[in-house]
Image 1 (tube, rainbow, N blue to C red):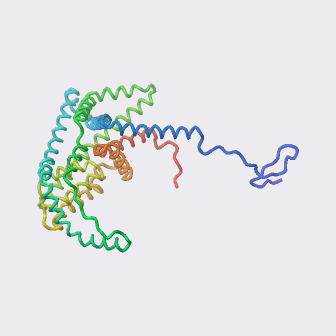
Image 2 (spheres, rainbow, N blue to C red; image 1 turned 30 degrees about the vertical axis):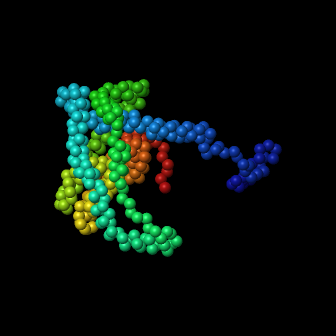
Image 3 (cartoon, rainbow, N blue to C red; image 1 turned 120 degrees about the vertical axis):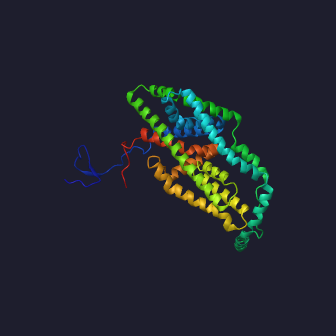
Length: 370
C-alpha cells in the first residue's frame, strides 16, 4: 500500500492503516541555556562599558599608553638591535615623541591665543558678514508662517567667550592623568618583551601559545604600520593645507597646517572640524564670501582625495577598515572617552578585527551564500 506524504503507518494490530502525522514536539529554536548565556554576556558587556565610563581617569591613560606603546615598540626593538638598552630606548622614544607633539601644539597655540584675545571683535565681524544669509532666512521665516509656525525668527546668537574655559577643561587631562600616561608608556615599552613572553607562557597547550604569539605579533606590526602610515599621510595633509592657506592669503598658514595635520588623526570628525575652522577664519579674514571660502573648499578637495585615493592606496586592503565600522567605533569611543577616545577608535578597531580573525577564523562553519 502506498503511503502519501504527510502520513504515517499505525503500529500494532491496525498496522498498515495510514494516519495523518501527529504533532511532533520540536526542540526550541533558542534553548534556555543559550538564552541565559546571551543574557549573561550582555550584562557583562554593559558592566564593562559602565566601568570604563566611570573610571575614565584611570583606564583612558592606561589604554592610551598601551596602544601608543604597542605602536612605538618596533622603534624600541630597532634601537635595541643597535645595542641601546631597551629602557634607555623607551625614554628616548617618549622624549622624542613628546618634543614633536609639543612643537606641533606650539604652532597651534600661538594663533589660538592671539585669536582668543580678539574674540569679541572677531565675533562682531563674523556677525556683520552673516547678512549674506538674510534672504534665505527670510524665505525660511515665510515658510514657517505658511505652515503655521511662529512669525518671529530667532536671532542668530554667536557663542560667548564663556565657552572657551569649559572647552579647555574638557580637552585637557589632569596632571595625574598625564603622569599615569607617561609612566605607563615608558614602563610598557621597556618591558614589552617580557610581557609578551609572560602572556604567551600563560597558556599550557602549544597551539594556544602559537595562536597568542601570532596575535601579538600581528597587533604589534599592524599598529606600528598604521601609526607610521597615518602620520606620514597626515603630515602631507598638513603641508598641503598650509600651502593652500599661504596661497589664498589666510592668516598664520603654518599654524592652520599643523592644526589640519593634528585633527586629521581623528577620522571623520577631524576633517569636518578643520573645514568649519577654515570657513570661519576665511569669513573673518576676507571681505567677500567667495574669497573667504577658497581655502576651505580647497581643503575639502584635499581631504576628499586623501580619503578616497591616497589612504586606501598606501594603507592597502590589509589595514583598510569598513566605513560603517569606523563610524560606529568613532561614535562609541568618542561618547565613552571624548577626543582621546576618538583618536583611539581606529587602533582599537584594528585590534578587535585581528582578534576576531584569529579567534573566529574563516574556515569555521559559515552561513550559505545567498
